[in-house]
Image (cartoon, rainbow, N blue to C red):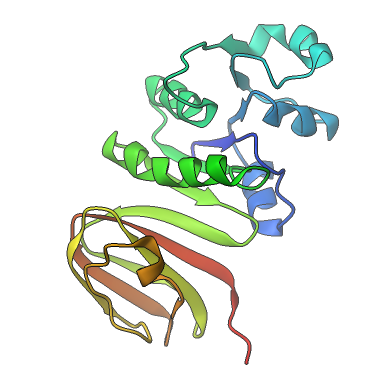
Length: 206
């Protein structure tokens, strides 16, 4: 039920899943320079968000009618795009192209998923390797046996897992919840508070 897709200005996706999400999107918002490759492939976004500093001069002129200049330096372009969609009443949002190029931008984009959830957004981030889902309290997820899972804790306590190979606890560092594994076709995270679930696409191979 994705209402819109945000194409960020990281590395353009190559994995078939984020590419499919982008192809089937009913509404596409490109973050500034993320529009360059999208347009180069013969597609036109519904909106381009940002201050235009990463957008090519040609595209800045040709697509000026869909370019929304937002010069707020207190937020990044990904957040500007999400807030734009929220203002339009779109709350079911997928984000692609948000990782790669710069690790600091990657970490920032991933951590912001929790902020979007707090704002009432049903958001998921699709990278070339993993699906990132911000969560609050108890959730159950579909998976495949040996699928690799990581749980990144933000404010959650009472963390407990079902259907995972290794036990969970109230992790205080991001690395502590990494490298877990599904043992069946679903797993459940029981908790009170906020955490990020990372589901890797590929299964673990011996």
